[in-house]
Structures are given as C-alpha cells and as structure tokens.
Amino acid sequence: MGLTLDPQALLMSTMAGGSGRSALLQQALQNTDMDPVMGQLVSQMLTRNEVAEAEEINEQIAERDERIHDLRDTLEDLGQTLKRVHAEVQALRAERAALQQDLGAAVEQVELLAGALGVCDECLGEAPDCPTCGGQGYPGSGFYRPDPVLYRRFVSPAAAARRPSAAIQGSAA
Ligand SMILES: [Zn+2]
Image (tube, rainbow, N blue to C red; front, side, top):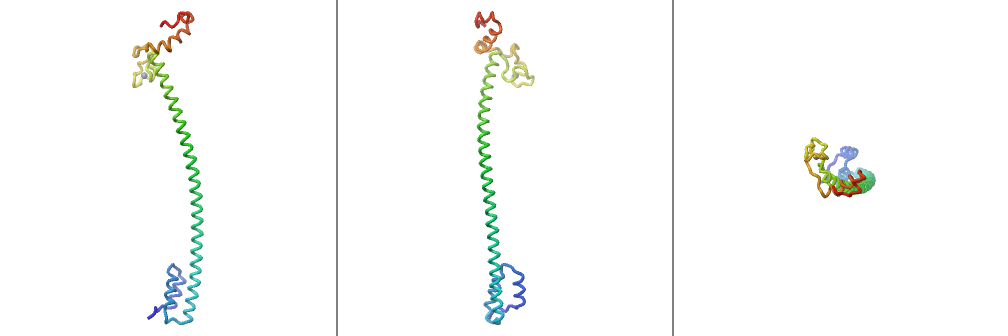
C-alpha cells in the first residue's frame, strides 16, 4: 500500500518550507494510488521546491564565500600587524641590549671612581636609607678607604691638575 497523504496537509507542509520538504514531496510521489493530476502537481511542486532549494544553497555558498574572503582579509591584516609588532619587538630588544650595555659600563665606571674616592658605590654616601652603607659611605668618613691603585689612577692626576705646584712634583700622593 502506498502512503496516504492528505493533499491539503501536503500543500500546507510545502508552504511551510523546511529542509525535509523535498523529501516529503518525493515520498508523496511514491504513492501509486495518487491521482495523476495530483501527481503532476506534486511533481511540479517538487521541481519548484528543488529550484528554490538550489537558489537558497547558492545564496548560502555566496555568503560563505564572502565571509571566507572577509576572513582572509582579516587574516592578512593580522599577519601584517604581527609582522610589524615583531619588528618593533626586535627593535626594542636591540635597544634594551644597548641600554643594558651602557648601564653596565656606567656602573663599572662608578665602581672605579667610588673605589678611588673610598665612597659607597651605591649612593656615594648620600642616601641615609642605602642598604649598603646606611648613608655612612661619604668621602672621608672612613666607612670605606680609597683603593690606593685606583686613587693613583683617578684622584692624584685630578688633584695635581688643580694645584700647579703639585703638578710639577708629579703624582706623589
Ligand atoms: Zn651607600
């Protein structure tokens, strides 16, 4: 026996739409008891329905293509941004390395001069809250003693240059 579908119910369901519409119409066509005129009608509806579905699918494909295109653009933009950020990070790293090198050299120079003067190489004796000397490492305090070698290297020539008479005698500190 075939499927006994009420034509009105069939029409209603096809008007309502849905993904199973073509399947329902297809199923109705299997009904061998169907009136030839009704069969032709269902057949036409099936064709029209399939055309509509195809159009719908094409529309969805077009929308998806557009979305993919947009996503590609976004991805390309992100790639460019990432490249730029990467270059900036590289530049900043190089800058930081250069600054660290400068800082290291400056610290070394301060340590040499602090050693020559016999002062704290953290604060020169000017910071009461200095963790190294507590503000006691100022020049002449005795907290540190000038390093003789560094003193002769840095302080003696400077002192001699300030006193013309001493300069003549040489660095006999
Ligand atoms: Zn200090």
